[in-house]
Image 1: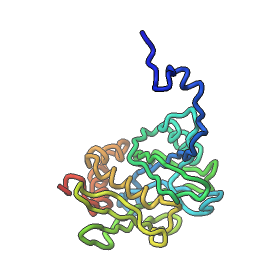
Image 2: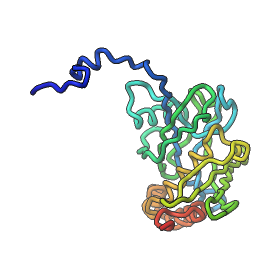
Image 3: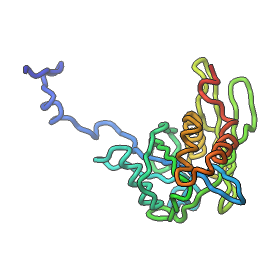
Image 4: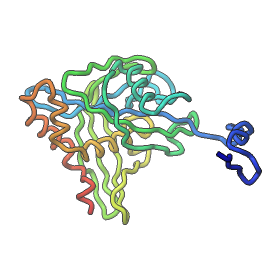
Length: 248
């Protein structure tokens, strides 16, 4: 087969041999993981998310979703599984991408673009243990409330109950195409590191779009007698967030 040539008369192999990958500045790529499960306390089930407390700069000692940098020879999903294992010891969970986050000021080290991954872990199947860049790892119960509403935007407050009480805020902004998750000003965003309030809210939206009964069955795989309780817990945590078909 005749090789195609570009306007400079180069074949693909010739073009690649001469190409300089450092000709343009380029951002770093990370992954952030929102791992959800159910906790049962005092006879009631609650939706929970796994957080780590950062060991190093930047955002040292702040709580965040587990995550880290993608290596040059890694698929994004492989990086997500590796970082989850290294920071929390959790393995074997299917990870589903749910969003990309690229605010220019989200990381003071350099320009960083992150791919978000979501996982659903059955009740009592994970015990996070801090490792690598994490000083601590723990499960936090999630409570979501609509804090303020206007024609073009709604502000949501996520309260996280665990080793301490954390607050996080993000918005839904509306245009002709519907709703889109957006950050609030940093001074309003709350207690999570970087833009992880937005990442967590986006993950909650993605979880809310999944069939409710399917998610509840996953949570109660090893304790099916708690299926109805899991459904109620999902409704409490997520019903305030509108689904895509409700925006039509």
